[in-house]
Structures are given as C-alpha cells and as structure tokens.
Length: 224
Image 1: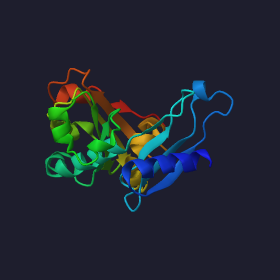
Image 2 (image 1 turned 60 degrees about the vertical axis):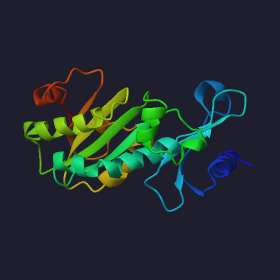
Image 3 (image 1 turned 90 degrees about the vertical axis):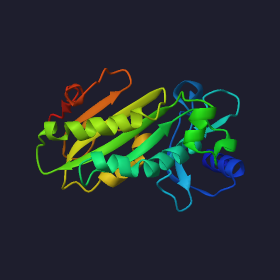
Image 4 (image 1 turned 60 degrees about the horizontal axis):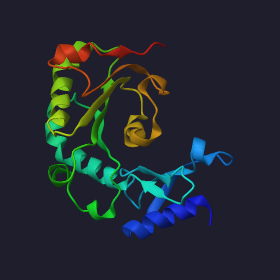
C-alpha cells in the first residue's frame, strides 16, 4: 500500500469516518528524516471546511500525525464566535477561525474546545484569518476599531497564543473563500498571494496592542 493509502487508513481506523484527500505533498525519498515524508491535506467526506494536514513523522519509527482535532475546534469557534465577529468585521469580509494544537488524541473528538482549555490545556493557538474586501486602495484607519475589537474577541478566549491575520484585497477577487478555507495548511502569506492584495496585518500575543492605533501601526502594504 502506498503512503497515501496508509495515512487514510490510519485516519479512518482512528476516527471511524471516511476522509477525502484534497492534495498530496510529496516528501523526500532519499532524506525523509531531514526533509520530511509525504503529507496529505484531507477532510471528512462532505465537510471540506474541516481541512487539515496528516502524514508520517520524520522519525524512522512509523508514527502518524494529524490535525483533525484542531480542525474540529476551529470549526466550533468559527460558528460560536460568528455573531461577535460579524459585529466587528467589515461587511462582506471572508473569515475563519483556526486552532493550532499538537493534540491528536481521538478521545477529544467530541469534546468542546471550551471544555478542553478549561479542564485540560490552554497552551494552543487560535488564529483569526480574515480577507477584507475593498473597493480599491483602502483607507485602513477606517477599519482599525473593528479589527481591534475582533482581536479582543479571540484574545478573550484566554489561550496562551493567538494571531490575527487580516488581508485587504480587492473586492473583484474571487479566490478568497478558498484561500481562507485552506490558509491553515497552505502556508501562503498575503504578500505572495496571486491576487490584488493591498496590504495586511499579522499580530499576536507578543505584540503590545492596547488600542486601535497600536494595531494599525503593524499594517504592511504590499508592493506591486
């Protein structure tokens, strides 16, 4: 059985669900311990929004990893924070909340994110990824108050780590929904996106952000 089949079998045996492979990233045949082995971007059947990475670790021992638990929690937060976030984000924004965690124990599949950080461990990262659609070059100061409040929403989850990643993109772009859906696995920064991106914000817990002005000091325009 090839590596793809082995990884999918591992996931289906572990979680008792069917999974669909969306993309395969080939690892190094000669130096897998140094450069990594094959990895898959997968999601449960009929749930493409729950996209995550799965693969085999670089060690010589056969050990698989996956991000399914984190994907479930990210989807939970996207839904539970919807009303709060949409009060703050500009109308028409495309967004998603992601959780980055090393937790992959199947027993947490049905446990709420909120229960997990309360009773188990809050040392994980919450990421709010937002595409703000604008009609031409934006006046970013107009967005400062809402984005600051959106940052406060994820900050108030009280996880050890958090990130706001917001890109200002032209409203004519039609790739943003899929970019946001896949952003937690594609590792493609706003500045390298094949789209009209005017600029972006990328901030987190290491930044001393006390007000909207502090936030917008971190805005970086994208040069054409």
